[in-house]
Amino acid sequence: EAEVAQSPRYKITEKSQAVAFWCDPISGHATLYWYRQILGQGPELLVQFQDESVVDDSQLPKDRFSAERLKGVDSTLKIQPAELGDSAMYLCASSLTGTHEQYFGPGTRLTVT
Amino acid sequence: KQEVTQIPAALSVPEGENLVLNCSFTDSAIYNLQWFRQDPGKGLTSLLLIQSSQREQTSGRLNASLDKSSGRSTLYIAASQPGDSATYLCAVKTGGFKTIFGAGTRLFVKA
Image (cartoon, rainbow over all chains, first blue to last red):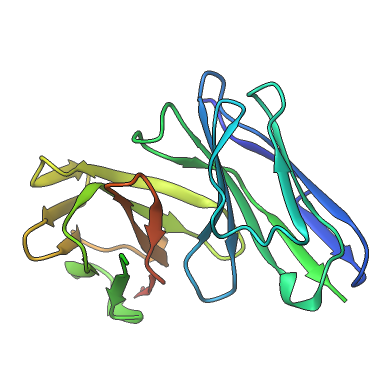
């Protein structure tokens, strides 16, 4: 069964360092999402791609976060510099289109020290 | 602005009990609603997707209903099992195709 892949699964970094997360969606899925989930809360959408284009990044802290999906397939989310408050689970999801069922990857647990 | 609320925040039931989880949303102009399960430290597993034109969806022991006019969805779990213990999240796809999640209901099924 096709799955969304994410790496790394865990990341510990010091504040002010740069960190990057990678996501490979299910083959053929045009829409890719990055979410941030703080412990005890629901996921919050950071950025949504349709193919290689950003369709929603209204909640992305653009002073330190960036995301790209250059060829419309896999995607990278970067944080530079990392802050203590960035400690969270970063989840990637994909769907056939923006209105179809979303499938999630296992997530990357980020700890900033 | 769309807000999604899940009540209760936590629920503990004995094995075998039927239970209902609630999800409410403030703006009825939604495209669809999706229920997920999340085990501790893991990603989300999709359970059911209900389109705005549908009233309910069923999968095995799970049944999800949608009442757009009242801004409510329920997830019914029949004959609960210890393996059902997890956090259950609902997510609304707004008319503008933005996804808004509730905070989830933590379910514990006692053997």
